[in-house]
Image (cartoon, rainbow, N blue to C red):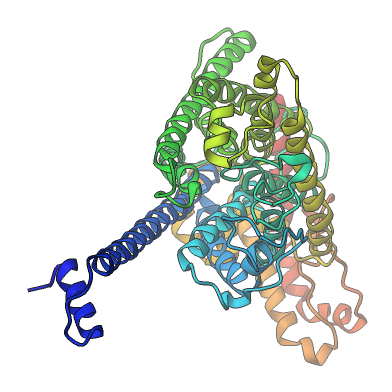
Length: 584
């Protein structure tokens, strides 16, 4: 039978006093110290479990992103898309473990002020988690890092090489994202409200990552898709001519998209509420509840607003009332993104306003991207980038003084609308929010633009143009054959067999060059030597300049002539399809 605290203290003190009875004061002190220790350990256990549970919810969002991406692409790209989503988590974990966490929080806990008052650009300690005591905090932050990385997966769907995607995931998780985290969330960051000397006495408020996670990922997606270019046939035919009407590439499963949306909404409760980090401090349990309510209301408002506006727009353009499920789901996600930055410091009515504006912004920017011929397969740019910006700005407008005092222990600078109520019109917090947005955009553009440009320049970014037509599954996962019946049904009348024969010939040709590489003294380019016959406006073509390699073509000339007809059929069929689409 276990002893009580009183019995344990009595026995310990008696031993110390050589069997003499302890004084009352000594006994009370022992009981009090034991209780304090037990209380502290219990609180630490609760906080650790809470953080692990929140991290699990955030990581579960990876499955939501995977379902949305898989549902938005055509069936001949599903396996490739899912594999990239899986690589996101793997690349992020390795990159964040080795150097990412050290750059983000090295030398600080990320939850308390640094007594030295120093401000640094990047962390310099805790590489490979050396010296880290709170492993649950690392896991929680890793889940956020993986979320930021996976935002780009859907935008680049159906046309990005696997190697480029893996390189990008590690780059973002190990360097780009951690610097943003350090600047805004670390106690040593120049934008952090936890810094002893915060920017303009306020610092930037981004409670759960509206800018840190979503703006970073969304801005990266915009840069990548601009450099990568649209999917083959989306805005241009295969000869590079602009289509009068963009060709729609509907995803193969709205059910998967809807499932992914609900999974993300569910995971967002861990994303936003879990960002309180400690559940046992002060009134944090009240903040967690308030955060979850705001998350719910903003998502609902964004969903309803997008459905309403898309229905009105449809009636105006076509004369018929139609309800667009895909717009509605993305409107819901837009509301979730927009409330992320200020979910703990805005009132419930404000969260509804934020969600309503988010839904309208999403729909408008989604239409604008199509007009500007920017191909975003899953609308990640309007959902994450645009509403990450709006959500961050909304904090500078709607941050409520009492909530600011509870969460950040500082209510000197609050939302602009509340400042007007005080009669001061103090826009310090709003200015800090704008500075933070500009910093994130500038940092991501300055680092990821040259990174993607180098991948593009050396031919490692974009997949082969013919692989795009037949689907990346056949080139990367070998899963095309099992879906051939479905593809022939979807592409009826488009002479898919011509594409397949051309692709099989290309594989044999590549295998030949690879086998004879050493003898010829040349190397095989990333894309086919004859791709220009299929895509005159290629973004990734490179000519073979090795004379020995050119001469070696004579050995396969007979086979090439036999397959020429298949190539011409494929090209004419694809171009013809673009004409048919314009006619429709």
